[in-house]
Image (spheres, rainbow, N blue to C red):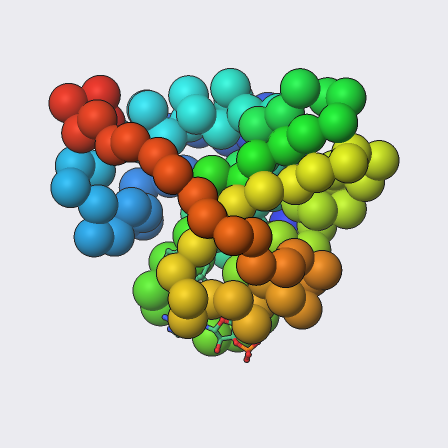
Length: 133
Ligand SMILES: CC(C)(COP(=O)(O)OP(=O)(O)OC[C@H]1O[C@@H](n2cnc3c(N)ncnc32)[C@H](O)[C@@H]1OP(=O)(O)O)[C@@H](O)C(=O)NCCC(=O)NCCS
């Protein structure tokens, strides 16, 4: 049975050892993963039998804007609505802000449009992989 929590308080790094960051150039360790959860403005975690099997994070100024950098569900749990549930809960936490941005692959536009997101003209970014591990 999958349950959801809106905080990383009390989560240990060994609960994050399921194999997140699939396909990333360097995998942040479970310790780094816990650190980024604790450093986020808002988080949503999905748990099964004490193991974190999905997560989403938001960073924010707490006044008008937020950005959602990370959403991932472990491969063996995908396709069951968990990603949609995590995002819906995270967006609900951000109610009251003016802008909530994220960038995503084209294949995921349907997921986000269903949650009230619309395509923006263009996004830009840089990736410094030396800072990942
Ligand atoms: C994106 C992700 C979090 C979705 O999690 P999930 O629990 O499988 O999502 P859901 O079951 O709620 O499905 C949401 C929608 O995404 C689609 N979807 C999910 N995984 C998909 C995949 N691998 N390829 C194509 N579509 C996918 C589902 O078909 C569904 O579409 P629908 O609502 O039109 O039926 C998950 O696939 C994942 O962790 N992917 C790797 C990391 C990633 O891409 N993160 C998003 C960064 S923007």
